[in-house]
Length: 246
Image (cartoon, rainbow, N blue to C red; front, top):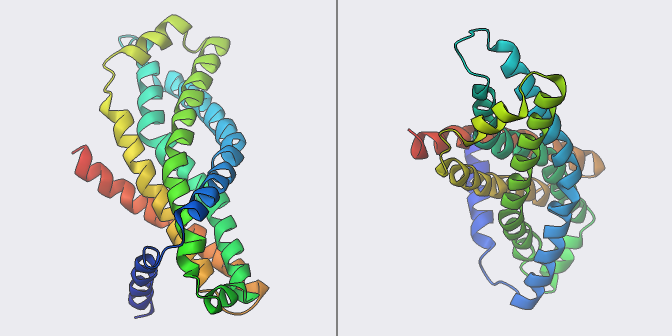
């Protein structure tokens, strides 16, 4: 019963985001600040994860190809499709759910327990819209670009690893990258990224906004934000795949 109540409360919270908005100029300034924090602040961890994962996918693909009839260019195909379809839009977004989601939940949760949100309400400000809407818009706008960078770095990492270890020469890897490339795969990945960006920011904001208690509850809200975001990302990954690819 508690989960049903939470789902209803979440959608009411989402509806409040578009009710009685503040001036557009205020939102624009905050959106750019959030884009900087979420996007550029996450480039380091995204690049490191993408580069090493691309290298691992390439080396493991080469290790598992034991049939001499299978060309080495198949390694490039496997690395490309694995990174574009699943690793960059799904795994990287799960990593960002831990970084961005916990930060949002703890930030808003701290404002709740220190009564800063109550002060905004007293001043007649729609606190949910003022605090949450810029985060949601910023994530939806900037995270697709972060995922595109992840794709590029992951494929580059696989190329360098394959060439330096001798598992897959550059000519074969590049041939595999170009072979039977489906441009819709990139579009599909970006659609998933937009959905996941909304999930991360909205779920984390909800958990933080309805925090009650003190510092211990803020920590629990951050944990719940990451756990629920990851579960929903996996669920909607399946739903998006079923709707768009099958």
